[in-house]
Length: 67
Image (cartoon, rainbow, N blue to C red; front, top):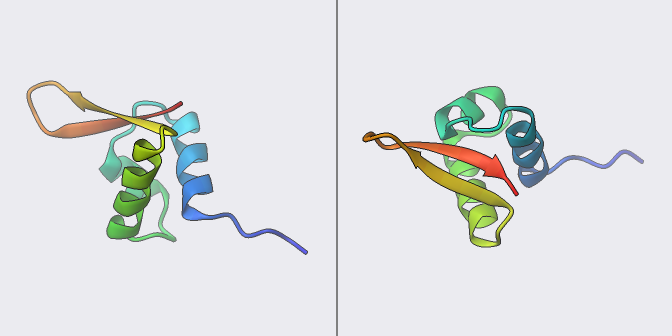
């Protein structure tokens, strides 16, 4: 039986593949999940220490880094 990957698995794998990607870039690369599902999971992963969110520059672009 094949295991289905969760949003968390896909997010972590994508951030490892594209370190420093933005939330919008991540959402574009994960078409199976809508923006709000990705956002909720990114928030959860950052709260438990699996992802680090970093504000870039003077704007509100958030980059993601797997820990």
